[in-house]
Picture 1: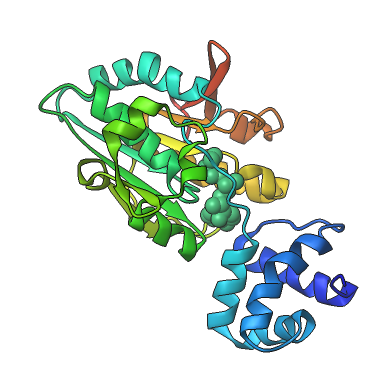
Picture 2 (picture 1 turned 90 degrees about the vertical axis):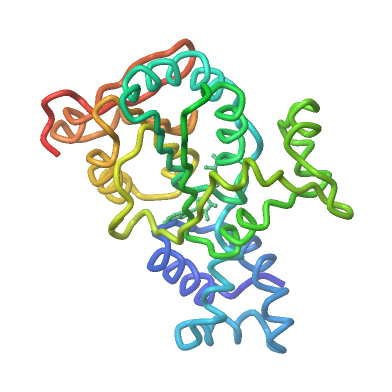
Length: 276
Ligand SMILES: C[S@@+](CC[C@H](N)C(=O)[O-])C[C@H]1O[C@@H](n2cnc3c(N)ncnc32)[C@H](O)[C@@H]1O
């Protein structure tokens, strides 16, 4: 059985309203697969469940958590993390020599692999006497809970994590693996919808905004990049996913960002003199 068209349309409108993610036509099977367990737990059909969502904030939260796409892995795409350690970090250490403190934002953190991958690199490369914090945000409360729990299955630790990192940064917890406290203490979580205001987060030396802009329409993407610009410190960096680009920005927004190529990886910096 697949979800009726009007049910699918009301789910995709709801997802769009709550997260700005676009569920194109043709993903009925995905909606059905993700909502069926929630509908079964609530003792109703998927169609009945969807009708409840506008008036039931608890089920709506669960449904949004189930419908966000949380695909991630350790050191995803490898090259951006190599560029971070070899190129960006030495520059950031120079720029931040006075405060010896770095701030990093994992802006759609999913289950935390991105934030903890960075924490591992900082553990290895940050000189003694430096401090750092990594703020991990996501629209999915279930994902944030996973970041706080910092526990990963055997399948998950097999996705991109070098064996040496498993030994060094994880402890066995039953069938799972748990990140050690010395990495966890640097990672804080916060619920944040990228399409809504970002109050009180401060500015960052590095923002990872990876593999999330692809789910938004162009207007939302541009709005996010416009509002994120003042949150990158003048010497700081923004990193997008490898299939994401700023080539389609309108001229006024394009003028606010400077694209730089570091080997195979494109990084973005605030353009000097651009209005914030
Ligand atoms: C595909 S994952 C990417 C995770 C990680 N950045 C990476 O590159 O591996 C996309 C994440 O974006 C989150 N997301 C979707 N819409 C969002 C929004 N409006 N605000 C914040 N996070 C959002 C999803 O919950 C999901 O965890």
